[in-house]
Length: 358
Ligand code: ATP
Image: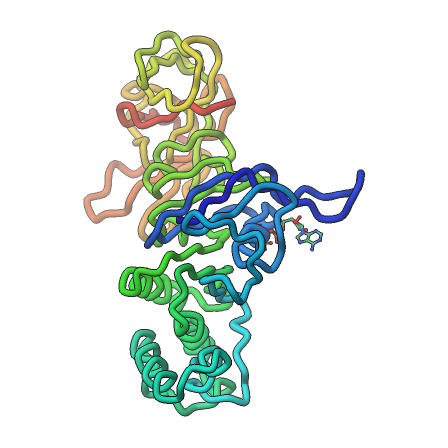
């Protein structure tokens, strides 16, 4: 539905021009909760602003339902934006804020009133309709901003880090709320965040960005379990990176020899190689602490970090010196307690690792 076709955006001119987006191509489907995820400065907001029409691309095209948006100013696009700052009018009531855009469009009063009450019900703010927005909490302001953006029934809602001003608990609550709103309204959401957990829990698909480019696009599971390259594996969650030698390959299955000599099977992913040196990514929860001679790796336990629901074990691998992090859920049926400084074995879950592109 939204086709972003080889879009580049340069700020400034000549040699000093800065390339904020570099030949970005992605198709966002109708009714999709699509997330742009990446570190600060990677170009997420710039891409959102191009879709909204606040800026034009330096090259490339953006199409909505097959129509080039190049000549359409922001107010003529069926697109609305929710900003991080909410940008509500403090002297107006909740209802007036939600109805503001519709009134400006010249909609009849009765229609504005009906839509406002429908939107307030949708975001569960009906009881505060007559409060000034300066007299409601941050989370409530967030809901009003959402209701206001949804009121003109845009085809696409752009959300630029809309939850970043909320505290942890409220943020978790609003994540579910946003997901509900998206599926109830059927509007395509394009959501910007640098928070990988937020992206994983809310999105249908995620585009991971870095340095003005898209590094990988996929569903949350695909991005987490099958990262294509080191940047993606590192940015999304904790990952162990191990140097290995590819000794055989059949389709997606690669046979690897690890630095300490053990052989394991892993997914070959998007790697072209059939032999030679590779990097293997293994998630901390895909490994278990075992007796010294019972795993594929051995090492010395340096740190044990307790997190309530789980515990992280930091291990320096024998001979190769690489740090390995292993995560285990805490449960009443504790395994044999281990001590800092102890030598331990590490058993890797079968075929859990992913070979990464260089
Ligand atoms: P954040 O998470 O910090 O908001 P982002 O991924 O949204 O980051 P953008 O705001 O898209 O990043 O910015 C991408 C790059 O383009 C940054 O290096 C930024 O400094 C630069 N940039 C953005 N707007 C302009 C501008 N108007 N003029 C010059 N450089 C700009």
